[in-house]
Structures are given as structure tokens and as C-alpha cells.
Image 1 (tube, rainbow, N blue to C red):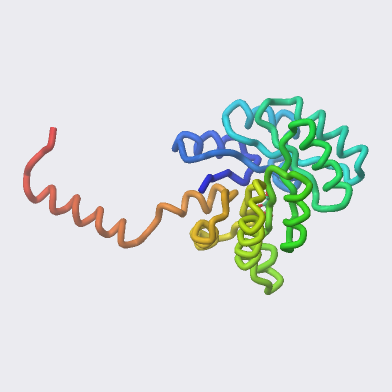
Image 2: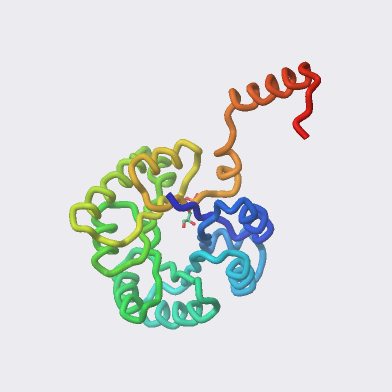
Length: 217
Ligand code: E4P
């Protein structure tokens, strides 16, 4: 499973990329607003830190303007992926970008049929939002499983990018189902390494090693 960071905070992305575990980044207009910074500057900085795909979202919702914005954003760096909303116009632009070899990420996916449409439109990535479905008492993880089954049935190459991740369990459950990628907020990525028994075990090994009076080097 690939790990993308779901953030527009350049310092956090830089720090996490040092782990060597970060395969890409996703941003969205809300994350850009939260950063308080200029969109294009942030995207260029992220692309200079991360070699993998960096999703930048169009602001327009109509076909002509999404095309114009997407083409402009695609020119900012080689690793840009154009994030398009799930809509008929978004799907039309997705198909055009596929023909132009511009990578796309169809966002705000909340149903298996939407994911099917994205795959047929040639999307590079589909972003089903797990947490937002759970928020309204629906089963976000079941959507990941349904999309996995559909894509396997027809050998679609669109990659499943599990999004709106709110817990460490979302990451492991999406991995068990076979999502290709999880886009993870920095806080959750940090939490993935934690286990109380690991901390307890390290403490007792350190204590016992000291009691031997030995040193390795
Ligand atoms: C995905 O690309 C989105 O940026 C993100 O995962 C949305 O998550 P949220 O529902 O926590 O805002």
C-alpha cells in the first residue's frame, strides 16, 4: 500500500518525507485555506520535496474552466495530479486529460457507481471518502471493498486512493481490503507506529540491558 500525506502544511510534509515512507501528497481547497498560504506557491514547494504524485484541485466546477485550470496546474510541476470533482463535467475533463496524458484524481466519491464512472473515464485515482460516510452513519469501509471488487472484476487500472481517513484502523482496514493507497493526515501517520506494548517492551529491554553492565560498541 502506498502512503500519501493529506496536508498542505509544507513543514509537516518535509518532516514526514524524511521517513522515506511517503509516496505522494493530496491537497484540497480546505487544506489550502487552513494553511493560509498562496495555493500555487504551496503546490510548487510540495512538488520540490516529494518525488511522487501531488494532487492539486481545480476550483472551477464547469468543464471549460476546469480544463483551463487543470492544464495550468499540470504545468506547474511534472508530478502534479489534477484533482477533479465527481460530476459529469469532472468526468468529461477526466477523459480529455487521460487522452493528453495528464494524471487525474476524481475526488468526493461516495458511491460504487461513481467509482465505476471514474474508472470508465480513465481516472488515474479515485478518492472514496471513508470518514465522511462514517460521519452520516454509512459504512465508508464497505465502499472501499465494493470498489475493490468492481475494479477487480473488470481489471480497471484506476487506483483506489482511500481518503477522509480519521483513524489508524481506517488505514489497516483499507490495506486488508486492498486499497492501492491511503491518503493520511500527518497526525494519524504519526500514530501508526504506536502500541503501548511496544513502549512497555522497549522500557523493559533497556532496563534489563543496563542490568547486564555490557556495551555493544
Ligand atoms: C482527500 O483527498 C481529501 O483531501 C481528504 O481525505 C478529505 O478528508 P476530510 O473528510 O477529513 O476532510
